[in-house]
Image 1 (cartoon, protein in one colour):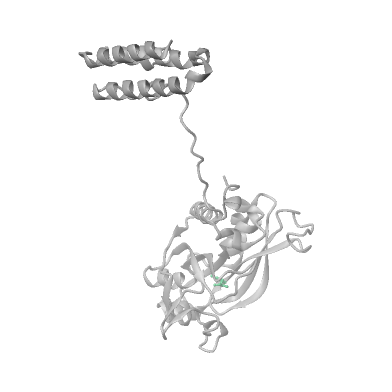
Image 2: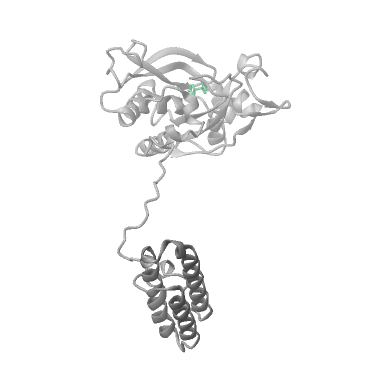
Length: 339
Ligand code: DAH
């Protein structure tokens, strides 16, 4: 095609489009001129045969022609370009948006609630901003106790603080319910800790409390141990059992620290458990009568046990997470491994 022939074809095409009377006529002219096998793509393809010196002018003219045809078609309500009218293939598979995963802390909390639910425990909730009475006094913590120090606890004035443990929810649960009480209380807790690989100023605990009438069902340390052993097996695997070590907490008497057998070496000793075969996971004990007194329960009539787990600790040993900070940094290299 020569430049002169191109100009004739150009004029003819624009005239033809201008006189198209309906959408189907416009569509067939689109196919005729700019469709995949239309005349303009054919002319572009044939440009290699145009003498070299005429090619720049010819190229410009073809582009102008194409632009004019496109805008003429658009003015007639047709599609602007060939590409845009490619029909969607409805049989193509959808685009895959990678699904997220539950955070390990949420998983531990939800799994724990499900395990304890099988034993009849319901979930109780309490506020993260607590008062002195619920967080310390009612839990039989003496006024001089170091945990009440300003260097250990985030205080707002004299009476309000960020709860340092989930134990105040025990107090709330007992003040608003008559026995029997069977609750777990998962939630955030705060301490003025410097953050390192195993400590964080903000962490999570799961509290547990069981109280019943001593005359009908005296609650014992053996009950506590069997419940924690069941939890250990369900949470960490069949091979995991529990050990109690004597300890002191103001709100339980006797008090114990609770270890799980190391699920990695099954108690033989490895790096995870620092060769001891055991991993510390909780504090627990029998509810101190002085706590009952603070909430108005008759300690002659009622007995109970309580426990408190560190959620981060369980998540770290269960999922092999070496640094607590990974749980809060939202680093995709860590989070994307959780699915
Ligand atoms: N509140 C304790 C802590 O933060 C953990 C704890 C120990 C909770 C003994 C309990 C318990 O309910 O009975 O260290």
